[in-house]
Image (cartoon, rainbow, N blue to C red; front, top):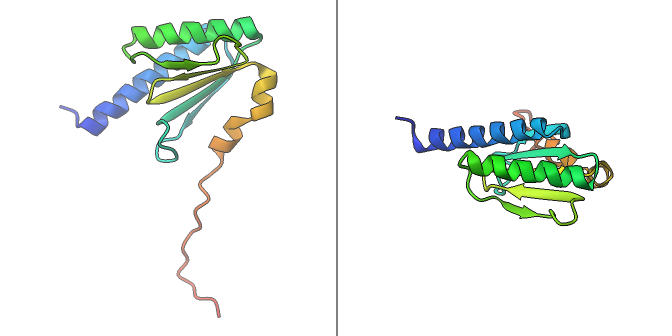
Length: 128
């Protein structure tokens, strides 16, 4: 029997796979998947994708919401679906952003999340 931590990781992995498959099936573009576990209390995983137009962004997000619900990932919180410039789908474990290309380029959130941890390495040397 898996430990609670393993079970949680399996659920997150399943949600990520469901989301990626849905985005690919909907012909989302430039899909980026980022593991943010330990970097933020917001979620364990973030996925960023683009749609070609307002209509495409809305369709991609709608398909994603249905796929996550059918996979048992609960009722996701959704923001931005009405304007479809930037739709955020939050399951609690994963956060998915679907952008129009110009909006994605403007905010460039993947750059922020993909930067390496900036914790300095402790060295054994003493400087005099």
